[in-house]
Length: 188
Image (cartoon, rainbow, N blue to C red):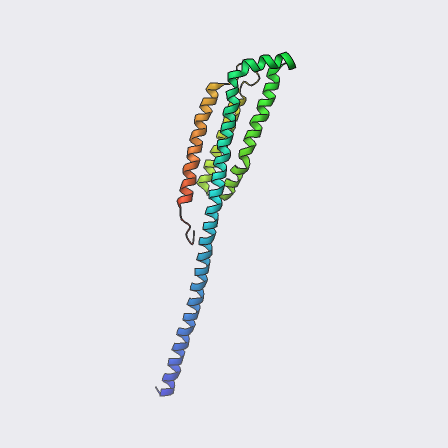
């Protein structure tokens, strides 16, 4: 092989190495940017989830407190019934309507935070959210139970639904804690 041939082969090898280096640098740089974007999105999503989870727990606790206040009126129901009957007529029909309206209003205060959490996920938190929503409905039903009769409030049913609600809240807290503790990673 002549010196010109060696020079041509060396130039071809150098050119090939340069092209391979350029392509690999391009793809590695592109992957790095993609991975960085994935991590940043994961961090953003984590912050959104944290805000949504806390807002849901606040709304949930407020609703449970309002349900407890409604049930607490049961201690004074005899006096309330006597006063109302003396001034307005049939107490129990009005009591059923007002109890239903109050339960519905209380439950609505939790719906938007529930929906926001379900938009953000992940799947285990979504399932816990569905259970939380079902527990809320059951507590509301127990507050409404027998609201059209002097047997209101149905303390036994209410206490049973509160136990169920406490379990649902604990399950949601566990699922959200697990979701928050998972660090965002590229490719996930």
